[in-house]
Image (cartoon, rainbow, N blue to C red; front, side, top):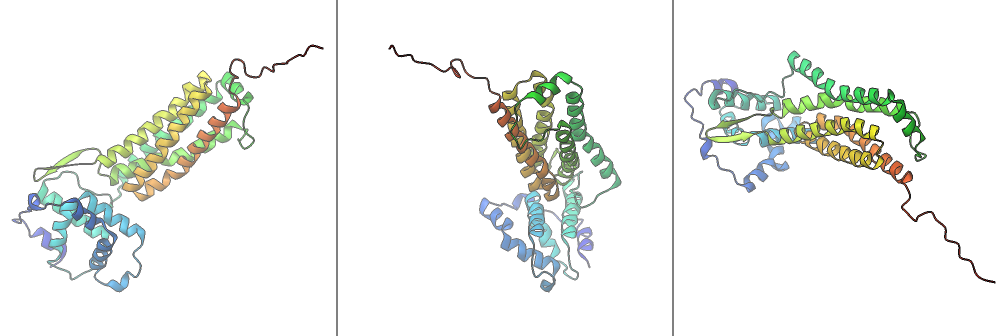
Length: 303
């Protein structure tokens, strides 16, 4: 009898989730590398197959445990029923989903390991948002001759690119993957809803925070347009500093949910960091002198 057969025969099995009590110490043990390595070796049954357990496997298992801790404990217990065949991480996660669907009445399955054509469509649509923001900013900038002339005439550091089209090209290249990354986080992170199992509430706060940071970042990127038109260098610097801060925070939040999504944001975080340094240097070099500055006082002595 296989693992799935065992699960399917548990029609009358009562899941005592309310009796699964974990304190912070228990959670730390479950998420510790030693426990996860032992678990992975057990799951694959043949220890010789895994000489080196890489960081990716540790990250994936830790993500599964963090999101479904109580279900995970019960699932491991059920798996003891039969160990006749090796189990992969996919099977572990799929088994947890099956238990949640069968016994918990959960409508939404944690199905991050399965990618469908519908997911492809949604990912493409998600890509339109940051790509559209980059194109909108480019169009608003190049079509305003007054702003272009103002920007061109400003004193800039020697390391700053001269051609404004280069900025727009890199904007588009670094922002285009953001939509796909955001959908990966949405899918892997379980969406934006919440549910209850055995009277205990669960939500996806980490997903909400990550996508909230992403949304704030796109808003700040679009805010660059009116700031450029106002020709306010100091406000432009503050905006790009916040843009970089939210990009870094979003990259970290994405990485904790989906490793690929987090890595896709790194080029954008680096580019917005360059923008922050550039706008700071330009604002400093073009700062108007304060009253009284720049006046040389000449003292005369009587002969």
